[in-house]
Length: 79
Image (cartoon, rainbow, N blue to C red; front, side):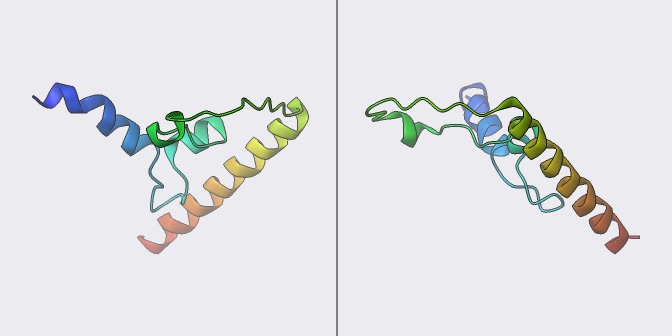
């Protein structure tokens, strides 16, 4: 039934780039793409990654500024 496909459908939607922003909703919210099932089959040796909070905050600010500019540009095209 449809309810079995809902989680996969939601994941796919949230990881798909939007034509107006050029980014996926997940990327806009978290600053990265989620791990897909194909990446979870063999995790191999685990690697720890740590991002400085200021670097992360700056990257997210830049990403949100790009989204804002793209949305404004997209809206102007359709006025």
